[in-house]
Image 1 (spheres, rainbow, N blue to C red):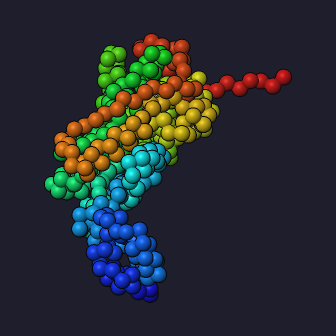
Image 2 (cartoon, rainbow, N blue to C red; image 1 turned 180 degrees about the vertical axis):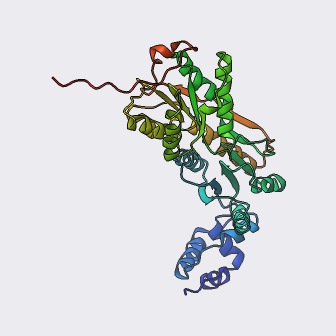
Length: 357
């Protein structure tokens, strides 16, 4: 095992006092160019690496922002973290990514505490509502921001999309196309976003004078296979829907696959709309109509907020919600003719085969 050199050894080799060696390596305080060069050469010779945690305990900044992610996996997280990285670097910070199923389990809290001390600030992405780590950052008044969370009020800033209003816009789009029997594929309840999108779904139906049908709400767990299974369940109903609103794009992709597997066509037989507008949404067939989340604006605000707190700015428990924008592509179209009136729902027709002459 390689011996870990100490700062005192670097100072001794360079022929300077330890405080002078510290100033040169930290880049803080005056050290002549000649002396700095000698100290850096000694540090390289001894393979000396500063202890970032020790520097933090002295009050130095690490220039690191911790990004705590609940179950890294969904494509939407890739887009959020990509945008966070871009804006953090623009502010002179790097990201330290920590992924866990929960942050409050006994074997994770120690890691959270260590990383929290190492980083200048934290950005917690899509945490579960019952994760007690949220209580910890509220109590400790850590420079932190919570991203894409809609489950309950927090005493730290929260930045997210306008989930309820965005969902209402999505369902209103389907209603304007003549659909009346519209299903909702929900996601996991942890972050509260699926519940908010379901409220928007109900808002739109009730505004159109339609009583929501509980049989048309099925959970797809925010994953593509879940969207497929949920759609299979919806298509097996005595009166299936003619349109599906999925709480994220990945479940919408699964819905389209399930519809195609039945010999039906999107949007001729069933329309599908998603939420997020991940890059793949414009590449699938048919291209997905969806609600565009402004990931770049969300990330820019989150980074700016946490960097401001690091600099000493006072920030209250505000919730900033960015509007989601309807992006119409090819997966939504007019309802089948018999569906145009609320009183005559119909089973989607199977795709007709054209006889070969």
